Image 1 (cartoon, rainbow, N blue to C red):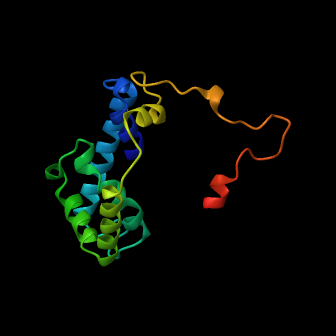
Image 2: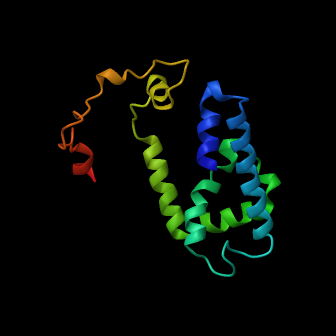
Length: 147
C-alpha cells in the first residue's frame, strides 16, 4: 500500500482523486493495524525478530515522509526505533545517506517522464528501441549485463 500511496502522493495530477485518497487511507490503515499489533508484542511475528520485521521496516521508515505523524503510532514508532538501533540497520542507513549525497541526474523532467506527469514532457514512445515482433533477439542486453 505504501508504494501506491507514494506514487499517487508524488504525481501532482492525482491529488484529491479516488486513487490518491484510497491508497492514503489504506497506508494509514496498515499503520493503525501494525501499531495495534505491536502494542501487544515486540515484533511483527511475536517474540522474535524475523524476516517479517526486516521486510516491513523500510516501508514503515517512510511514515514521516508520506504525510503521517509518528505521534499517532507510538508502538509502531518504538518498533521502528528498535530495528533502527540494530547494527545492520545502521549500516543500511549509512549506505542510504551515502547514496543521497551522491550526484544524481534525476531532475524534474526525468521525474515527469517516470511518472508520465501531465505537467511535464510526455514520453515519446516512438524513440524507444523495440524489438521487431517477429524477432526473438533482445534489443539490449545492458540490463542483463549489469545484473
